Structures are given as structure tokens and as C-alpha cells.
Image 1 (cartoon, rainbow, N blue to C red):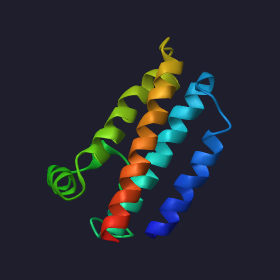
Image 2 (image 1 turned 90 degrees about the horizontal axis):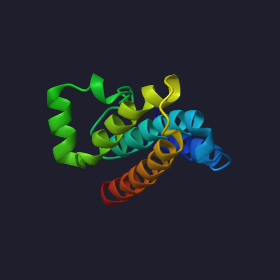
Image 3 (image 1 turned 60 degrees about the vertical axis):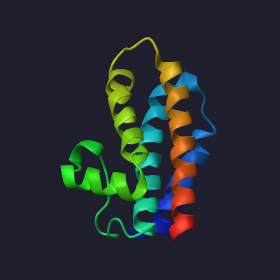
Length: 126
């Protein structure tokens, strides 16, 4: 997918998330994870860090070289954000952790930060 397609999907997911509240934590956290991957791919494709045919899907799929390369070129915050969501997701989406609303609120904050970083990265270099 081209960078613009990732941005459009991320923005569409964000509009859907606006209709929810932290009380809907399972959907919020899953939606944030999807939107994050689209923002990361938007940023990385925009600056040529990854090919349109090579999307980042999960932080744990990234090789050591990719982590280092992407971290140096784009900043480690992108994969760190994805890792944080991937860490909180299982216990709140498939588990019964009592902190769902707080996790959803944190997930939305992470999404806002990654969105801002992705837009800045693409604007500065694209």
C-alpha cells in the first residue's frame, strides 16, 4: 500500500475511535493498534525507510537490523509505541485485567503521539 493509503486508513480508524470511550477498551485498544501500524507505515513509506510492499505489522517481527535502522532514521518512538500497545493488548482485549479504561486512555495518548510524529516525519522529509 502506498503511504497515502496508510494515512487514509489511519484517519478513518481514528474517526471511528472518536465514537467510543475508554469504557469500550477492547475496541479502543484494537483500533489503536491498527491505526498505529498505518501511521508507522505512512511515515516509513513517506521517507523511504520501507517499500510500499513491505509493511510493519508487529514490532516483534522486526529484525535487529530493522529496529536499529528505523530507530536511527525515524526515531525509536515508533516501534516503542507499537511494542507498548502489543504489551497491553492481550491482557485487556483477551484477558480480564481490571485496568481496561486506563489502558484505553493510554492507548489513545500513544496514538495521538505517533500520529503527530508520523505527520512531522513525512512533512519534514516527504
